[in-house]
Image 1 (cartoon, rainbow, N blue to C red):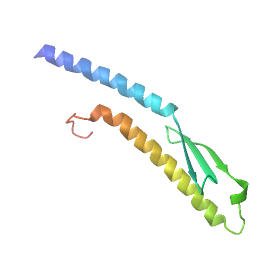
Image 2 (spheres, rainbow, N blue to C red; image 1 turned 45 degrees about the vertical axis):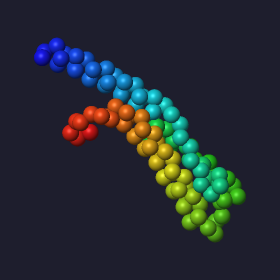
Image 3 (cartoon, one colour; image 1 turned 180 degrees about the vertical axis):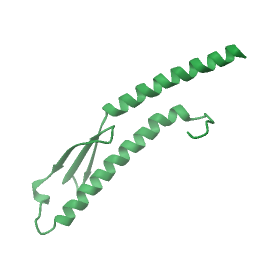
Image 4 (tube, one colour; image 1 turned 90 degrees about the vertical axis):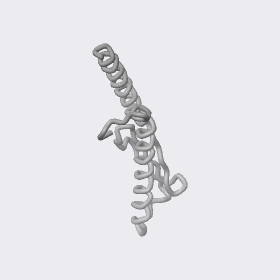
Length: 103
């Protein structure tokens, strides 16, 4: 029984290292989303930090600031969803098949 427990602990430690490595790799990734046919582009890293916002000059209309705000929101929400999906795909592989409460 003790040997089985040691083996299980080694497996858990190995999985922990793999999870940490996968998370570090995720943080290094760059994600990009556009809205308005490329009028607004938002770039973020895997830590969900916005790293760049590009706005094409022709979309800047002082009489329609609301449209520009909507485009920025749309691109930002899209890039954050991409990060969330990639994170779930990557980290989900570690919890698949495990019946651990709270995970």
